[in-house]
Every structure is written in structure tokens, then in C-alpha cells.
Length: 180
Image (cartoon, rainbow, N blue to C red; front, side):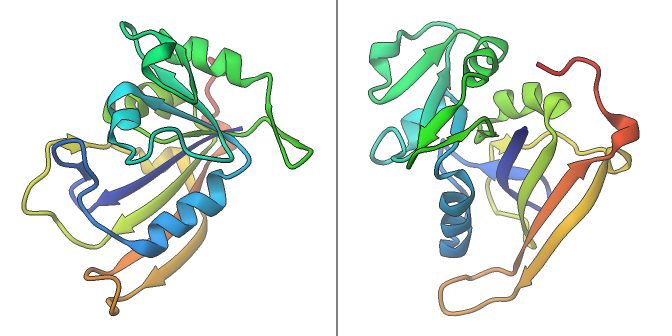
């Protein structure tokens, strides 16, 4: 299964200057819960934005046309999303459990390429429009997706903006024929 995981503002903004726009501890906690024990695929800039490099307890795969694997300690490197997903098919074993689930974690170009291939979207929908953004998520065609989970959250002492966790699964009649 290919899942895309992203925190997205009302205007589809996802980043500014290679950083997340919003700091939402519950979003980071959900990200860790969903991706631990699985393969994560990201672009070079997303890897470079990780404060401590490769994320622990996950198989980290970076897509980069120009960089070599040595540039990404703790991660594998492939020249295309297709090559990365082909490699990811071999699975990942964590705590003696094998997983073939892949999470696409960014950035915008990787999301654009992966959206037609994705089975599921794990969204943190932020009910706000940021003052500044330079990176955006591609448009989601609602006819292709069905909401399977929603959890709404308001403002609190740790979260300055309201947000919702929403999972969307691709509708069967819109399944793509180019699955990897």
C-alpha cells in the first residue's frame, strides 16, 4: 500500500523555506505512530530538513537524481520515485514484523508524482491560511477519494490553530492502472 502523509493548510500550503509552516505536536505524534515500522520515501530537500537526519525505526528512502547515497546517512538513495517504490516492495522488518506499506512524506515534487499512485492520504488539514508559503500540495480531486477517518481538534495550549486528522482512501472505480 502506498500512503501519502502530509500536513496541509486551507490553501494547500505545506512549507516555507524548507520547513513546516505549523508546529503541531499532535501532528508530529500521529506522523510517528503511522510511519514507525514502515518505509518512508522523500525527496532530497525533505531529508535535508530533518533535524537529526534519517528517522529511526523506519526504512528511509531518498529520491535524488543527482546526489549519491553517501549524502544521506542512514537512508537509501534512488534516482526516481519509480526506482524507490520498486526497492520499497522488498519490505521492511521492524520488531520481527515485515511491512510493505510505504509512506510518501514529501516534498511537493514527490507528492505530485506519487498522488496518482497512492492508495491512501493521511492528512492533517490545518484550518488556517499561513502568512507565507512557498511549497504547496497538489490539488486533490474529491471524486477520486472517500473519507474513512476524521478527528477534529480545536485550539489548545499546544496548538495555535484548529486542525483535523483526515484519512482518505482511493475509490475503487478510480483505481489507477499504472500501479507500481
